[in-house]
Image 1 (tube, one colour):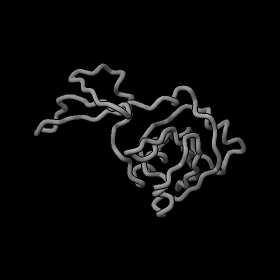
Image 2 (cartoon, rainbow, N blue to C red):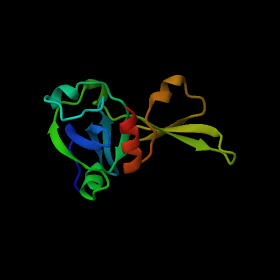
Image 3 (tube, rainbow, N blue to C red):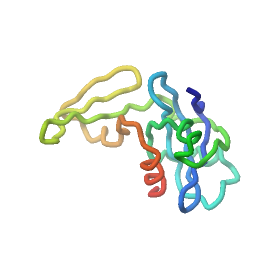
Image 4 (spheres, rainbow, N blue to C red):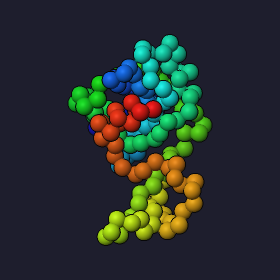
Length: 146
């Protein structure tokens, strides 16, 4: 399966304009790791590389190349830029483990290589992305809300 490469910037058509994503990592067993770039844009910004210097709105995993190829998302690669230092290491994803009542018993944390768990993580883990594959519809909704 073909994937985008780290640094690639993808323009996504939204109901109110365009949103931009940057691929940060490829993993051999998972789809692309992607960061959402800030803002909605009525037209493509003149300097895509400058846009990529902005803060990350959220990070997620999505088979982006396949979603575009299959028409589940409308968009295209519009360039590439250096990945900011804050997003250059593989992110740690979190995943809740729940009991039968739906309460979180503990959290799994995955750094792309190994898993560890914590029954009482501190608040710093709240900002970690969830270890899930984002759907095309969920991505469009989340990008539209940025």
